[in-house]
Amino acid sequence: MDISYILNELGEERENYFNAIAPPIIQTSNFKFNTVDDFREALADEYQGNLYSRGFNPTIDILRKKLAALDGAEDALVFGSGIAAVTVPVLALLSTGDEVVCVENPYSWTIKLFNDFLPKFGIKTTFVDGSNTSAIEAAITSQTKLIYLESPNTFSFDVQDLEAIATIAKAKGIITMIDNSYCSPLYQQPIAYGIDLVAQSATKYLAGHSDVMAGVVTGKKELMKRIFEKEYMNIGASLAPQNAWLLLRSLRTLPIRLEKITANANKVIAFLEQHPKVETVLHPFRKNSKQLDLAKKQMKACGGLFSITLKNPSLEKIETFCNSLKHILMAVSWGGYESLIIPACAGISKADFDLNNPRHVLIRIYVGLEEPEYLIRDLEEALSME
Ligand SMILES: *Cc1c(COP(=O)(O)O)cnc(C)c1O
Image (cartoon, rainbow, N blue to C red):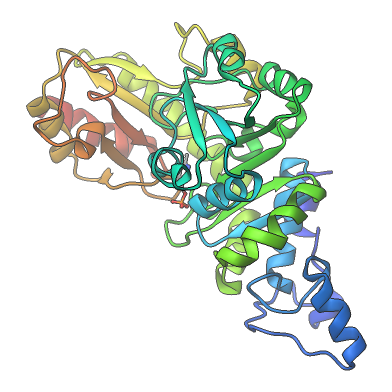
């Protein structure tokens, strides 16, 4: 399917709404039925259509069709946040006594889901170094029902071999799920490698303007229906029609935004790589990475997110550098217009900060849509301060 067709036509039945070019926001909680028979049929199978907007809604449906097509999936469910798109499917697929094999150091709230939330239901998780496919295989037990991946990781950018892991999982009847927020469907298509479920924080590139929280999971219809009929409807983390509409609007410019973000980031990375005060620039396509061939096989490009370390770092140096930036904003998240910075040390108490822990000295940068020269000047000045 052509990407332009997906973004501009798929799911849009313009004749149903006055031939408007932009899709409508169907801001309603419920839908009416003319006969008890119709009503009964709709209540018996809510996955089939519009009944109540906690389930489906016409604006949401346009978005679901586009997001499924972008991933090469049969169907998509959308949520009020990215973490709901992770938590709800995981809860739907697992029962007491089941086990999960999860890649090390995933997104912070994903760690809390597996470490703190799932144990309440007697579900155990083993965390494994995802760059080592045999370690993932070795962690599988007869109780393993889910292998959870995040490739690339969004702080250290380690990648996992999606095809190899999907093959191992399929042979054992284990479901595989990935958090694909870093790449978006434009830069990585996990379903083509055999991954069952693809989750994303749509708050990031898909929404792209730092103004909407949303999440999506895509996969086979049978799996989506299973998730929808139980935990999706019960937890009720659905997306508001207004926010679905903002996402539809954002999707039109996703390719051009990502293209510019990637070009900007490449310029900023080239500047940082030659800067005497910068020790390393971490991203999946870095030249000396052991995982470069794998990353290039699975991914089209890296986008705007990478981390750096300073030469001979100290907490003071990291803080001075970050505090000195005038245009790059200190904030969580990424994917919008604005370039952002987040030092790992901001999430660690001063007492726990360990200079010898390679993760503690990382400084994550997101390059957005400003002109790269403007960002480079900001970085240059801030680096001269430390
Ligand atoms: C932001 C993020 C999430 C969570 O998404 P929200 O939209 O913030 O709920 C999950 N995974 C990754 C990799 C993220 O960056």
